[in-house]
Length: 86
Image (tube, rainbow, N blue to C red; front, side, top):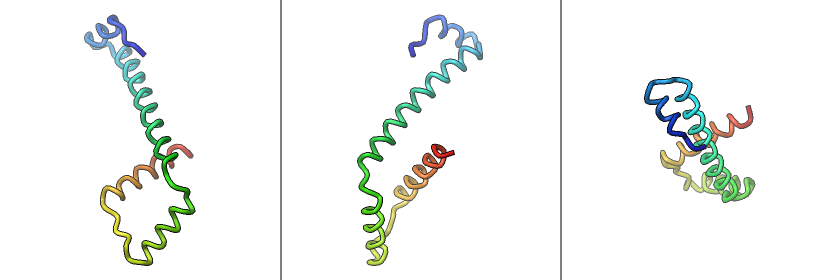
């Protein structure tokens, strides 16, 4: 969505309606980017059964030591999945 010069002027004047419309457009673009990113990651992920078997084997061998980044990534993905299913 392109923002017109008139809309920019209304925002500069402090018109909350104009700002709300622009904010909504920006959020829609951000959501589209997030959806595309998550979709690509899901498609690139291995099959669930394969992933679970690998994880179980690593835990049993004492080789599962997730980093803080990995834990954070999993928490974020879980939160996104929970929102999608609500």
